[in-house]
Length: 316
Image (cartoon, rainbow, N blue to C red; front, side, top):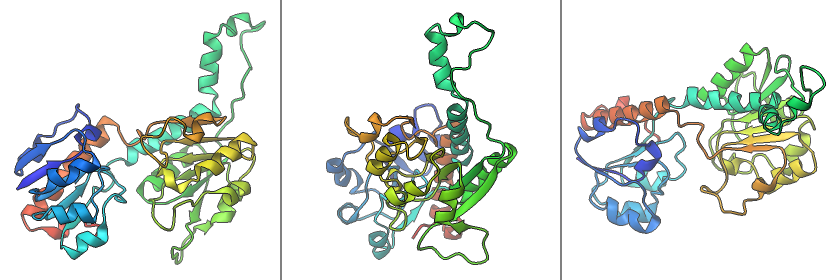
């Protein structure tokens, strides 16, 4: 089998890729631009891509293509309908990043509630040395216990985040995403969750139901003391509206690992927003998670080659 990895740099250089090469002739590209994609996949039977777009014209160019392995959870960069027309299987790996993302969520929630970065800056500015007592109460510290966490998107990651929140003594609310059907569930209406949560955390995929899911109307419903956490996809939160909500103190703060355009432009509006932590889409990237991802891709390819489609997580 001719296997092509289009953006291997996203997998890192500190993990073992040898289990992929055992399945065939492996060609590895660190990065691939839109202009390079068609040429690089024209003879491929299997494509591995994280964020490189595989749309209609790319699929038209890949005459031998049989399998697309998404090296991510989200797959909005793949034209699923066009793949269906060509009987091309599209697959991803389930659950590889759950622990990594949940850990990052609470790392930054705790940093926010403990004023960790502010205290670190204060110490380095020699403020503690000037204190008249043994302590320095220059920034507030807030306990998570008793606070309410609202979760939008209650899949594997959302559930794990909820479990950890329970260990801190938090109350949990899970939201119904508009347009989805919910039967016999404990999920609450979105407006209720937004209005009654101290922290809102997003773990839903980006699609037609979730694009701009959090905009001006939703932000107005949140408590002034609340923070918004987005570790899902940037397009779920309207960045202009979030900037305005932070600037006018409609909400207390935000933590985002994802932006609408990645990498962002130099003038992304959120870079100038107050009370926001921004990380460069790294919540999923623990070494352990990336190795699980590669192992899962290898398993999908092996099952495909051996005709065991029932064991593959097929997205289309």
